[in-house]
Length: 103
Image (cartoon, rainbow, N blue to C red; front, side, top):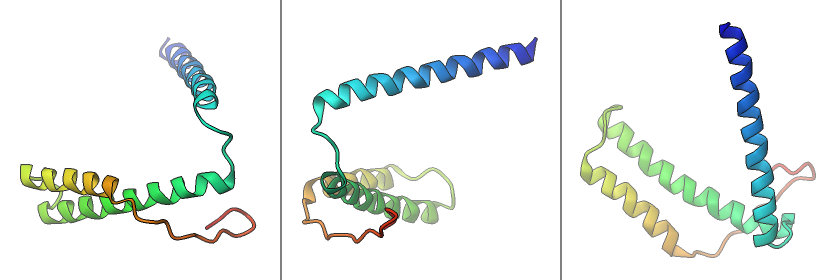
């Protein structure tokens, strides 16, 4: 019986995943211009930079606290890092991409 429930659960999760993909595709296609390699790269680079800054700060916190929960002060520092990176608006350096799409 447990195996049957597991199969039903897996099937349900696949249906939900598919529904989410369809909804995202419909909404995003209406809201965004066609996405090309040229117009997506600035976003990709920006997100990578923000993620890098955030993770660098998070690693510092984790190292300082040895895996223990950080203090409220450290959490505020992390929040400020995110806010600062959102406001910086630095020009993006071009990244080169090989012919197979790898940077």
